[in-house]
Amino acid sequence: MIKTAGKLVAISAIAGLAMMSAAQAEVLKLGLSGPKSGAAAAWGIGFEWAAKQAAEKINKEGGIKANGKTYTLEIVSYDNQYNATEGAKVAQTLLNRDEVKFVVGSIGTAPVKALQSLSERKGVLIFTTAWGPSAKGPNFPLTFTQINTPAEVLDQLYGYVVKQNPNAKTVAMLNPNDATGQDTEKVAQESWKKLNVKVLASDWYERGTTEFQPIATKLATIKPDIIDLSTTPPNDAGAILKELKVLGWKGVQVVSAGTSSSSLIKVAGDAVEGTYMGLAADFDGPAATPIQRELNKGANAANGDPLNVITIGSWDAVMALKAAIEKCNCTDPKKVAEALPTIVFESSYGPAAFGAKDVYGTPQQLLVPTIVTQIKGGKVVEVQRVVPPELDARLKAAKK
Image 1 (spheres, rainbow, N blue to C red):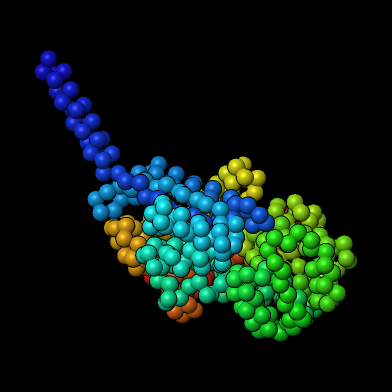
Image 2 (tube, rainbow, N blue to C red):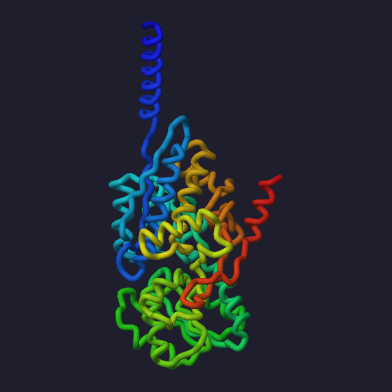
């Protein structure tokens, strides 16, 4: 009886500890704002999937520990349709109704700015893929960029294109007529000029356009050596490339915000061959990390589309957030924001950090390799990888 009583006491103690642990555990909601319908839907769908994989991994490994508590993660995601109006609605829902204090991913400069106008006032920390410099800097202390943007990508991408095509001396550019396109166009103009490539035209089109033959005809008529579709999303870019082939234009094709061959090929077929891209990645290739290979395989199975630099960014944001919360031992967004630039964390690319204060005035840019890719044989092939010098210095300092 004594032994039995001892066992009962032990069981009761274990049960009590479990109840105490459960009582201390809290759910930390993490918001997402991305397009899950329309021409950019592939970005939002992959983005949400990667964020949920990161949250699931952290939860399985015991959650996030801070301030004597354990936090499990829940992803709350909405479709911003890649425009400011829906972006504002998503912002109101996430921050006011769901009371989210951390947004681990937001896609599209226009919807991001709509979110940011509220998040900064309410003290909510956000991660964003916004591709323009206007969404970051000292005026936005709670905003962090989770992917490489024009300042990190365009000089590397365009430089490689010119090196491989030395006879190409002129370019025609096309961007969506919104905040994303407008921000990027300014940086792109300067990048091409630095390479002594003459910009013959820089045109715009409205999102939601479905007839691209007139646009392609106008571009082809200019007879540029290079056509840069810049921030044109996958379905639209594919339609334009298809029309350009029909018109017989045979120049150099660049989609600086291009993310994958599969989305382009679905629309344009073999017209995409040879296209250079700045936001794609071969996450099955020799330079990919084990976690990138695993995630890419899962995304292909779940969504029928590989991951790219945009979609894997939500995974990296969740991992950065975990490291920063544990560093400051708190869930106060302002204190977490102060901790983010001080950490080196394990991203999908390997050790990463936040920096680029010399470019933006504050260290809020994710430092990961810039990857230039080209579509060869219907597949994305990595042709150049550049590690930011600042990241290299940070990693060397961390080892000392």
